[in-house]
Image (cartoon, rainbow over all chains, first blue to last red; front, side):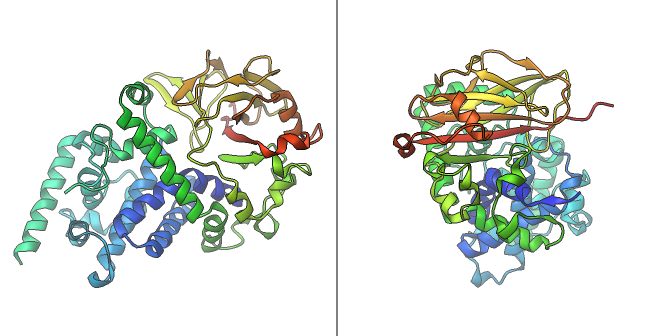
Length: 161
Length: 266
């Protein structure tokens, strides 16, 4: 479907500050956050025709989280102001490697499971309960708990190395 | 460690979605009442509003939307000439203006010429500390669901309109259907702006059933710190009257539009 410029302004007007807030919170560097927020909207708009979300804020927040974690993971640590624990989460191996290998879009739009790292941020940084995380990502509470436990194990193993 | 979760009882992500109206209705109501009783909740919301205003000032919509547009690649759609809005393009009544925009009287020297002003000019006139906003919900089997850019309604749906006055004292709400018919929702007569509840998400006295008129329905929320005549404002918006008297131009009238898209009937 043809994209109208006003769709962008509308979307940004409504959700821009939320996405920026998340990017600034994780990246802690203004120019990186600005670029990241822009990329999140680009990603969202490119695939807007496939969106069937009830609340765009939820999806955009997770997309922003995942995108920033990827940036943190891929960046040289000394160049990044992100907090230590966020860096650790970003660098961690997802307990489900096959899942991690899937594209973000496939996960987000195709009904597949969410990145465990994103779930960890929702739980630890945002203070969502396990139930809220489960609602957010469309999983069972026990599934979320299991995944987070796996991530914790992965973090411990990283520390031990 | 938990960062960014500054409010002890309602986390920030939830306050953020409360402001967007993107929480289940029972949750919205719970925060509505909690806000009245717990000053910390009201403060948390005020902080968010202030932060939003600062972020909008630092990262203006015009600038960011332009960058996003560019990154998406030209030729994927149409952008108004020179990257500016033109009223002619918005003629199907701001069908494309999905979110809040402000209409300071000062700009009304020519008919809606503010739309062709530069993005930075428009950003300067942004609302300080939040914007008057409309929220629409439709009754569904499991309660009520928020309507929005990605959630359309259909004929027969029971729609409840809420407003958030963001501190404005007077307001009026009307809708315009696909045939151009105007329906006043607040007040029903449309002859005078009414006193608004200045905080919280306030439901209109009654819900209504969406009819089968083809095309979307555009809900307009006009709000100001002073009384005004919504009839004349709506006429101005539709180009049927002259700009308001010069003496009133120092005041600001806030105008937000909620586009309710309708699913086509089979």
